[in-house]
Amino acid sequence: MGTLNKEALINLDQALNFSRKEAREYYRKYINPSLAQMLSLLDFDKGFVRSEGVHVWDSEGNTYLDFLGGYGALNLGHNPPEVLNAVKKAMGRPNLLQASLNPLAAALAHNLAKVTPGDLERVFFSNSGTETVEGALKLARAATGRNKIIYCENSFHGKSFGSLSVTGREKYQKPFGSLLPDCEAVPFDDLKALEDRLLRNDVAAFIVEPIQGEGGVNVPRDGYLRGARELCDRYGTLLILDEIQTGFGRTGYMFACEHEGVVPDIMCLAKSLGGGVMPIGAYIARAEVWDKAYGSMDKALLHTSTFGGNSLATAAGLATLEVMIEKDLARQAAVKGRLFIDRLRELQEKYDIIKDVRGRGLIIGVEFNQPVGGLLNKLTRGKVNELAGEYFGSLVAGEMINKFRIITAYTLNNPNVIRLEPPLIVTEEQIEQAVTALETILCEGKGFLGVTLSTTKTVLGSLFKRK
Image (cartoon, rainbow, N blue to C red; front, side, top):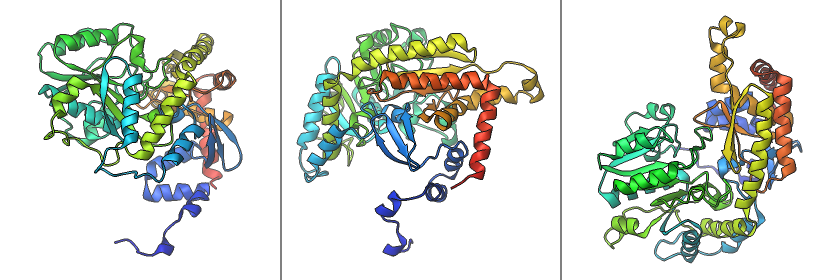
């Protein structure tokens, strides 16, 4: 049993004034030692103390540009005042009172039904993206009476058991043994493979991301989502679109599926729905689908969430949608995204190490070529290529943050891709800063070896200047 002594506890004021060293040591001891070590070696564990819009400040007064954007959770930027004010306005109301109907949740559900495509109407509120996916999978099985779920290779839908079962990377699945049964993968952007699996008429749902974010920002060919919709209709399978990362203006449309005019049976939402202030997720489904699963009083409570749809989170959601529409952020993302991609493709033409630039709106991936052959790779028995494939994205991200104070990261399923996913309020000047920084890294580093050597200096430096 822990020590029941108030003096032994750390209070909020003390925590707010932690030094970088204190935060690192407590993280190592009580949270995740290996993650703390990795971030500190790359000098990623900055002591950030303030944020606003696209900017973040560390404890030494340095200013950074955030081009990671909370993996798509910060479409409005850091600490948007409209969302903070909405949360403050809702304070004092009951935040959790299940013996009543929350008017803020009801209002947000109405608004989601108005901004999502087609006849999506019934909303279930959760607290995160992975919980949203869990709920969507359960809804699909209950509504259809079928068990099979089809998902895509290289996909990412979360790390709880159900969502992990439909996440297409073995690295995240294998350590946990048997996952949810009756889940099968097909290649992404392959309608024939999908139809071959649906032919058996036993699939409850096909879950797919309109753009694979963690897979390396993989954009399917035009017609893929529309074709998937047609196949699902033909074989009585529900279509679940995971718009957790691509939704709310990120791709230049309010929702990425609007690029092809596709309406799913169930849409998963989260991340930016809370304006980067409150955790909130939701799925929204066609009424016919929802009613088959939960449309009677004896089934109304089959799937619930204690904190789902609480007052403060739904207040944040109400304000977030209003700001997105008022500022026309989807259109802004389309315009700025075209500029950003065009500039990055200019770099691709100049530097062979850039293999591909892809994306839509302001979800962009830059993939790097691996060094093939060469004396260094032979001398290291292939270790150079192995290092490039697993770590080069993180090395470039390390250079971006440590030399140019621009925050980026690699994608989880493809660590050879760095993601550029800034808040949708980013300016063209800030985009140009990021492009210039990347070009300087590639030009001065002269490819993989130069970037590796530069990062090694950072690692050695971090070992000797711990604060």
